[in-house]
Amino acid sequence: MKLIVVTCPHCGGRIQTAEATDQLRCEYCGTLSRLQRRTRVLERVLPPPPMAPGRPAPIALQQRSRGVGMIIAMGALLPTAIGGVIAYTVLGSSSYTSSRAPTRAAAKVTPPDPPSWQGGAPLLTDLDGDGTPEVIGRSRRVGKVDEIRIIALDGKTGKPRWESEPLGNYSDTFQGPLALAGDLVLFASQRAEVRAFGAADGKRRWTTTLEERIVRFCDRGETIVAVGKDDVERPLVRASGARATAEAPPAPKRGPKPKRAPPCESAPSDSRGMRDYHLDWSIADKVDLAGDRLVVGPGGRVASGTRRKGTRVPTLVALDSANKARWRVELPTDPLAAGEGAPGAVAVGDSAVCGAYSLGGAGGGSVACFALADGRRLWDRGLGNAPMSSLEIAGPTLLISGSGRLETRDLDTGATRWTFGR
Image 1: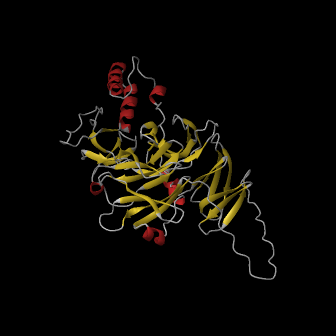
Image 2: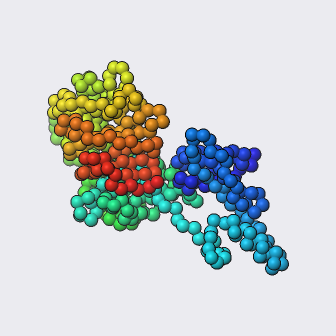
Image 3: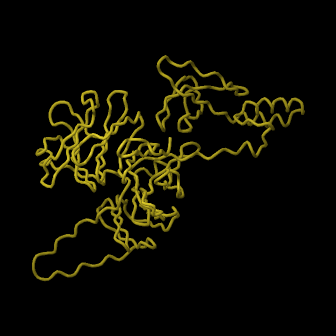
């Protein structure tokens, strides 16, 4: 079976597929496309296959083969007249158009792949002191290369402020933690290489390699603590990344042994799960909730879960200091039309709480926000079929992070402020 290479019309990824197929699904972004082929000799673009009724799909174009370059080279060796005809015919079918014939150097120039948002919880820090925090996370380019970098976006406009050097491809990096520790952005690879970048400019400050994979970081001022999968805390000098000497605990005097020090507090990470807490069963029982997790924010604590009996409708319960319910809401406006299960993501701010849920079937996802004081519904907006990974509240803004896209919405109205990525 012969394979051909096509370009995804949505993300630009290069995909190999069978020559006989009419439709294909992108392995990177999941987009379903119709395949538009080329002829075998001069590779003219052929008409795409007909569109299935009621199933519109974009068109993915078969890429030119290396054989076309061989035809052009052969044209230079033939008599001038014949060579000119062949060169004109081949170049005329190229995607480059100009009033003059493109030069050999110009034909090699291709625009760089634009970055998209990789997903994960955004890290927030005010880099310019304007009161609006900038957003730091992972960018991804999918095309000729699969490349992950760290990116900082302006909090007001969503435009990139800087990008770091490449961290590797998706497979190399997706399990490595990314954390913000004051003026440093920290990343640890699966080979236990820790890299520190300046939060202000994205330039690498230092690199060190440890003997165990790192799962989280802690910020202790002059030292950065890298915590391994073995639960061992490895202090590093903040300025250089060199191993710091841990202070020896004082020798115990006669009497009971000193209590073990509690684990260090994790620095903000783009792994949202590290920011939420398991909901104790006793609290879930008290508020009659099939509990999922406890989400803590500056305005209070909210339990996330579903109805305890019957249809598993996604539900939020605001807790008071005695772990009793202050109010209770079901996220969907039409509970029985929504997908069953706990909220996909929850964020608690100073005055509002937002949760994501599935609309069920092919309806995609939606986000609903409520007043933290009394549970009054503020707004509910659909997200389409784009995969979503986390919600984050920053002042008057809700950040919705998903695979390939980051968007911000007004916390009071749900109106879109800016988007980044595809």
